[in-house]
Amino acid sequence: MNILILGSGGREYVFTEKIAESVECEKLFVAPGNAGTAQLAQNINLSLSDFKGIAEFSLKNHVEMIVVGPEAPLVEGIRDYFESDNTLQHIQIIGPGKAGAELEGSKEFAKNFMHRHNIPTAAYSSFDKATLSEGLSYLKTLKPPYVLKADGLAGGKGVVICENLQTAGQSLTQMLKGEKFGAASEKVVIEEFLSGIELSVFVLTDGENYKILPAAKDYKRIGEGDTGLNTGGMGAISPVKFADSTFMDKVESKIIKPTVEGLKKDKIDYQGFIFIGLMNVGGEPFVIEYNVRMGDPETQVVLPRLKSDLLSIFKSMKNKKLNQEDFEISNQTASTVVLVAGGYPESYEKGKVIKGIEDVENAKVFHAGTAQKNNEVITAGGRVLAITGMGDNLEIALKNAYAGANKVCWDDIYYRKDIGQDLLALE
Image: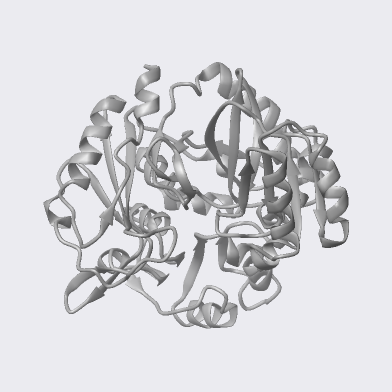
């Protein structure tokens, strides 16, 4: 079958690699893709918001499945666009419709959903510009630190954690009145701070059945020791030792099952990934957020551990037969280190020539912000490459990942040297 993958990052590169392995894959397209996907599939210059262009290309090239990588096309309703047109309905979309995508598109919607279906999460309230004074008063009822979240999509950077009441009040005012995150912060959710260990759990559902993918832990801050600005993610580890069978049983019974059942109760036909950001608070799971797609860079440690045919798994979802699919997970540990352009997540230069990719051994190189120019691979984004090492334990996986990272270079390269060290300390 012919498949189109939407996106250009490390997550989409992993999808491309995994789907290309399937015997059922005939032609594979990626829009817009990167320098790495160009070596595995055919890159197509299409805008992710150009649903008409995507539809025309899909019909012309007999595409039977579209795998949506990032959240924006889902929140904007690409699934609804295809399902509302008789000529497009035969094309399977991996990703939820607009109603289901609100779990990520609106923090307020997600919190109300959790409250309605008794899913454990932090206490919260939401405010807009007109209710700013009430928001400032609400902050006074909470203990520091204070968590402020832009309601809409903000590229993973719409969360502000403030250590004192004065800073929290200033940040709330900047978000609502100063439009710090643009339209995303027209409404702000204020949350109780949860103290614990963070992790990510991934679920794939066809609307009736679900499969739980390996858990992972990612590292959001730019600086070592989890300091500095938030990023899209600087590294990830899977599995995580503290997410043992006892804890994961609680996650399934208290969060995953009520989430899938809640979507059905709300008459939302959800087909795709559910990324559940969790906090382990003294052995009890609490939901921090939902995303409606796989995470990046977590995909780079989760999917390499999947031994089963990903395309076959996706195909089964069309007729709600996911429960009949083989789902074999490797016992190995995977660790990924993200190599970024100097200056990221603030301003950075593009167009730097990347050297050493072909020298990487015992690790996978996943392209993200890369492009091709004059037969050379160059930097084309903030997060440029992810190097994933695997091994029988975390120590070996990290050794392989960092050995690979040390082989790659370009002018002004940066990566954290402490990924996974906190987990090693727990062993």
